[in-house]
Image (tube, chains in turn blue, orange):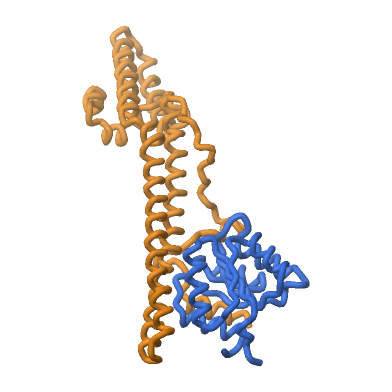
Length: 128
Length: 226
């Protein structure tokens, strides 16, 4: 099934620069509807207001971290189907395991490049 | 011997104090080294008491007097280092400087991103070949700008380390009789102990080279769940 490039994508990071980088890279990959949130709490508000086809989230944020957001998403019947990619500098194996156990769809280690981002999006969403 | 040691406790006694003081601070209840000093003192008294004479008694007093003078000297030396100044001036200054670095790199990164976005718009108005090359170049710029996020997280780790030092300086000041300087309101972070994995223990930030996992290792770990 073709990937809907017009679906809403939520990117979550507490660094404005990283949000900007992610938005630009997503736009280059032809995702047109990219929304931003600066922490887990704000992200949840967005997710409960409209339909999203993908969440790409940082881990280290306050007050709600990326892993807490992931657990909230997976614990919510209306949201639990949304693919969730963690994109973070937290690269210890304990982190990866914790994220997997919480239901992460894929995991990108910062710093990353556009090729890695695309390959993880393809593995989660399918070819586009 | 003691007089010799006392002589070392002069103006440049910082090193000497570090080397000798722990053995000669029996009055410092909290200092582990003080216990060794106390044992030594007791042994010394025991060796003197059975056959104590006026001459030995005055020798003992001289030794104790020398010891007290030495402790006072070390105390003065540490006070001269001005631990209060370290806490009140240098540590906040270092934290401010680090914050400034984050701010400056953020500004610079945004300026670079502004320029890259303009180039990307121009790419859309160019021929396919030139546009493609420009777009590839802007992608590389976006990727490189990720450094700001990583350096910001690393600097935050340093700021947390400074807070730890601040706590230790407080304790040093208390140990030497000075009132601890006004607290910044944040308790020093306790050293992490090995234990159950918690959300807090998982927040380490960027890892140093060869400490964290590479993207390939992460991929392999994830694949092992399938």
